[in-house]
Image 1 (cartoon, helix red, strand yellow):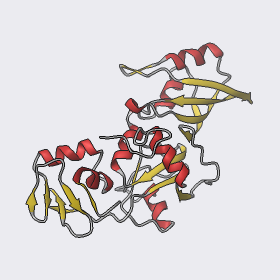
Image 2 (cartoon, one colour):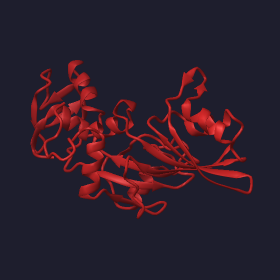
Image 3 (cartoon, rainbow, N blue to C red):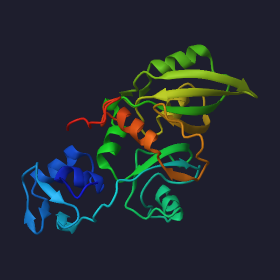
Length: 255
């Protein structure tokens, strides 16, 4: 991030949510620069010299925007901290020397493994998780039973989960063995325990669940429990998927 930047972008990079959410903080008079409350959404701040606070709480200066990829193991929480001292994805980041303020993009439940993005860029995080931006997530699913093609078609068409109809998704049967079925599921949304609940509606318990890709990014070199920064190409592609960069263009999309 350059020294001089719009206040909403600065706050988004500091982890206060999307740029629009940060604009709401400004509208409500919760943001101050050098001790004075600001109301101008187009205000420019100097990240090197200005003292910025949200609700009287100082905002740490952000030297760089971090975008990391972690392959989460089973048994690790996708949260910043846990009141019961269980291991979190942020603990893994710290073990690998990443001490910046980071937060996970979306969640994988305790018993789900796979690809998870960690970042301090609130705008990117918002777009990666909001269904409006239609970023497909790919999962490998192992379920109990020899699931029928007709059942797969019903699940893919949408399932009622406590009054909420899931969006249509893409499901492919990869193989059957020992009374289990392995499938590939591609979702545009990610409600709490959605895949497990969809298959449970038809009597098929999910035995193992792993997120294997985000859009067309698979990160095959990242082992379970490992974390690394995205390459320049990977980060650019992720921002293209999120609509922050137009494909084939250098210029960011205007907010």
